[in-house]
Image 1: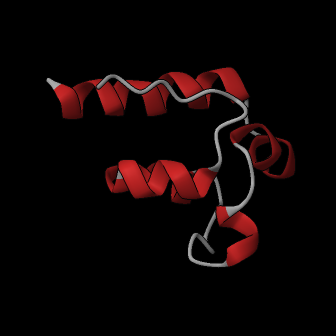
Image 2: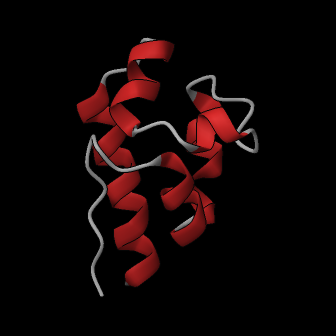
Length: 70
């Protein structure tokens, strides 16, 4: 089943299906991945808070999912 991460995808859901993405979130400054607030944010919300280009992050995350499925 192919999954695509969008700007509206909840970070907790991403971490549940693709825990290998955690370092990518840490790289953008999300150092509290286990706290309920960060796990409940969308990718877009996290990007706004951390000053990250959402499209670039989505590209990176979706590439990681594609690598996992290959």
